[in-house]
Each structure stands twice: as structure tokens, then as C-alpha cells.
Image (cartoon, helix red, strand yellow):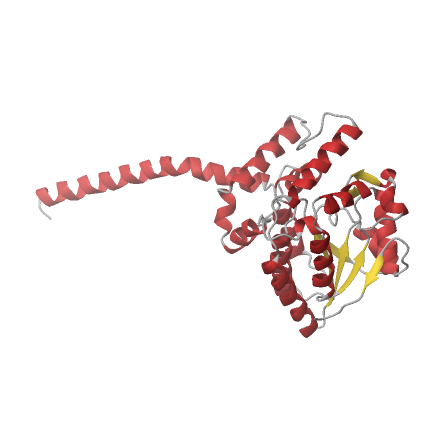
Amino acid sequence: MNHSNLFIFNSEKRDVVKLTVRLAWFGLPFLLAALFILIIDPFDFFEAAGVIPDEIKRPIAMQLNPPLWKLNRFEKDPKEFILLGDSRMAPLETEVIKEVSGEDYANLGYGGASVREIIETFWIIVKKTPPKKVFIGVNLEKYNDYEVTNRVSSYAAIHENPAIYFVDHGVWEAAYYNIRGYWGKAKFTLGTPNMTREEFWQEDLKTWGLYYKKYAEPKKYRQDLLEISKYCRKNGIELKFIIFPAHIDAQKLITDAGFQTQNEALHRDLTACGDVYDFNWANDLTENENNFLDPVHVNQETRRVIITEVWKNDLKYGKLLFYAPQ
């Protein structure tokens, strides 16, 4: 190699070294960011031995993205008995259900869940472990094709490509609140009302009433639930539904909105898919405000009543509507 070529070779080598160093400096922040998320691991996606205990992680994850938290846990510990639904199903204590029925349930109910999220969760779980029994909570205001919220998609995307976990906005938000909760001792809460119980009760009624103003006939959800029902019948899965109780004030929203026909259609559609336990009618339970935390969410004592009635089939406040395929 002559001197000229040697000079060119050395010059190119120096350029490569400089470029490598620059790329390393450029990539360092991304590496540190990824390491930060891996150490905090706010949704326990990697089950890393992070510094943040579950008692801090869990309430944050359950408020920001409950499907990501719960489906990660289910993937690592799948069960054959499943609960699906929104914030009325989510608080049902699986320990109490096991005590009453002997069946060990995974509660995959999410606060604010749409029927779309319920349906997508069903198809995710049956691919992992074929369940023996599935309970789905569906109430009229959410049985609405206008409701298309889908947080389950973030779990599906991250599960398919774990690299997304390191750049997901919700993961970073949860990591931030994890740090505040752990080192700053700041308790994370969303939407804590600064009002009396009666004021909150009336405001909550207004919020639930909005569901009947933005409503689309559930043609898609009706078909989706029928597909789930067919799958369950074909694969020997017991499928049942629960219509949770709302206080009589919230039930009145249905009649005030002129949705009696839609309410009757809900019952027909659900019984076309499986047995239905209906608690949402005027009775001693739904007329007593002391049984509720707000117009549509029952307290712990009433949840135990529901569990006992459904899993012991000892009905007082619930009506059993039998499967009636159309």
C-alpha cells in the first residue's frame, strides 16, 4: 500500500471512529431511558426486580391503563374462570367468589371499559388458556356502538413488539407517578371530587345521563357477542352475563331518555348469547341509597350479596333470564 492509499485508509478509519463515537453519544440518552423504564417497569411487563413495590405500582397502573396491568398478570398466571366487564365488575372480590363457589377467577374487569375492550379481552384470553366459564358484565349505557374506547390495543401492540413499551406515553406517565409515589410519597388519584356526597351523586347522574345522548344502536356489538356465544358453545365454555344494579335514580335516566325499547333489546340480545343475571330493576336493594357508593356502583356489602346470589344461584334481588337463542 503506497503512502497516498495509507493516508486515505487512516483518514477513513478516523472518520468511522468519530461517527461511532457520535452515534454512541447520540444513542446514550435512549439507552438510559430504556434502562430507566426497565428498572421501574410500571406495569410489571418484564417482571424485573424493580425498586418500586406493587402497592405503589398497582393503583397507578389500574387508573392509567388497567388492561395492560391485568393482561400482563393473566399471561403469567392464566385461569380457567374469567370475569369481564367495566368498573362494576372490576371490584368483585375473586377471593369471596372462590369462598362461595370453589372456582378461582381472574377478574379482567376494567374501570371505564367499553364493550369493545371486553370483546377484545375475551379473544386474547381464549388464545392463551381455554376457559371453562366466563361472566360478562354489560349494562345499557355501555351497550352502545358509539363507545369505542380501546385500551386493550396498547397491550396487544406491546405484547407483539415489546420495544413499544419503552416509548409508550402511558408507560412513561405511570413511571413518573411511580417515582413520585416512591420517593415523594405522593398518593396518585384521578378525579377525586371536592364536594359532598349528595353533590357528587347529582353530578354523577348527569355524567351517566350523557351516555343516552351519544348513542348508536349496538349492531356491531350485538354481532360480536353472538360470535363469542357461538365460540363458547362450540368449545364447551359456559357463558353468562350480569346486568349490575344501579340506584333507582340512575334507572330513571333510562325512562327519562325514552330508552325503554333499547333496554328491552339489551335483555333479548344478552339472552340470545347466554344466561343473564339481571339486578337492575326496582327493588329494596336498588331503592336504598346506602347500598351504593354512587348511583351505579354498589358498596362492598352489596357486592357480596351479588356474589352470593349469582354463584350460589340463590336469588332475591337478581332475576335469572335463561339462554334463549334466536
